[in-house]
Length: 93
Length: 484
Image (cartoon, rainbow over all chains, first blue to last red; front, side, top):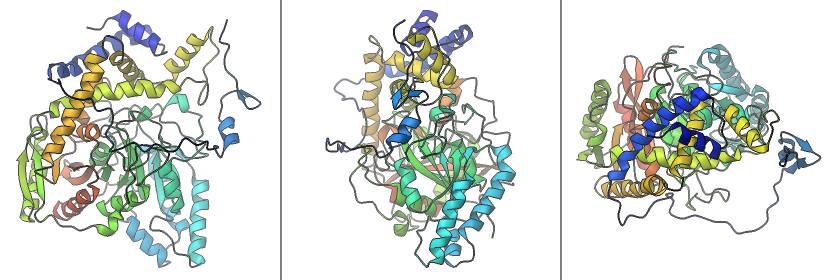
């Protein structure tokens, strides 16, 4: 059973704030879901290769520089900016 | 002219014969949206201004005696997880409430090239996570057949818009059933193509090894017509296969003679509504009368598909949604005492409960100490599931199942119990895990609500699914249009 501390730890790792009520409801819901998926652990998978995705082949394109045709639009979509630079909050306090 | 029975083909015919103009068609659908969508809430954003411009362009081409494409001039809805240049694109989430897409998804660009008249963006569960469209951060969509019931999800807005004849067709996405389940609930045709057939460039990704884009239409032939345009290799999605794309609808043939149809016994057990079962079994008998060979088969790993899905999908979600930090696009939270607090606040406020829940689960199953037992084990079981399907398809051409175990449920019924909600996808999720195409076709009505039959085939067998779908459309009891 996953405990409250583990939920808080996961929330910290994934940079998500939770209210104290949410910590309790998430604890129960996440526990239920993990319990539901734990059925897989009884399946014998020795000698089985994991499938990360299912495409016959991955068609990598040549590693050539392509200029994004709409740079100004991309920059204008930034929430805060100075000239063409993205403005971010202070990193060091 | 009855807007509820028009199709891509009938409208195209009328356009070419100049019985109607593209602007007139748009006006009809616009009126319908204005009349109905306050209640149904299938749209998050409408853009009649650009739609009108598009329609005028098509009318001009017709006037100039230019040949127009089959899809030209027809009003379309696009699920709001797909990028549409210059138009608000929210993914149903507060965190992208004010975001305007800066480029078009490949599928959107391909349809625009064909003269699509895009009227707006369809509502969906937040980041496509849900089975009822109740997880939209804005409002739920309602089922056009009964406004107290859900349209299914996550592409509920796209399904409801087609069912209510607010658009001719629409685009949705399917990661675990999000096209097929709402198609079944809304009495329309929904196709999840083979993984690798349709480019996902410009799709706000949820789980990249599972996500697929496909159409909602009223009929099977229209589904084939839309697929012919959106399918095909794209340098911007490395998983798309370099294959020659068929003209799917030109190759249709309503014939099941000699076709081997498998009924996986695990899809017909406890939990399936008896009335749905009897509709499906009646269709099966009718298909047999048409010359199909019906074969009972077994997919013994079926019960493990949802558990595999609820490990792999959240793992990919936790990684894909890391980019929503509030810094580069979308909404920015208030200033905080440090960067950590800023991230946690922005993501805590910007993401709804289901999104945060899945991110936490994904983070858990990828954590040191758990990754082998959960994530890696799930990927191995996924291999076994794929092998099971591969084996089955050496003995049958196609599998036939119900699309959903139940009729559309009431709004609010499952929203507080995530696990119950997850079970809505029990029949659809395996096709995503194995990368297979799945088509949901309306099969009949139960208590005046539509139910769907699902066809699953080997990779790239879309043509076979369409052909059986056509026969089913001829054999089934009539599907009433919603009374709107």
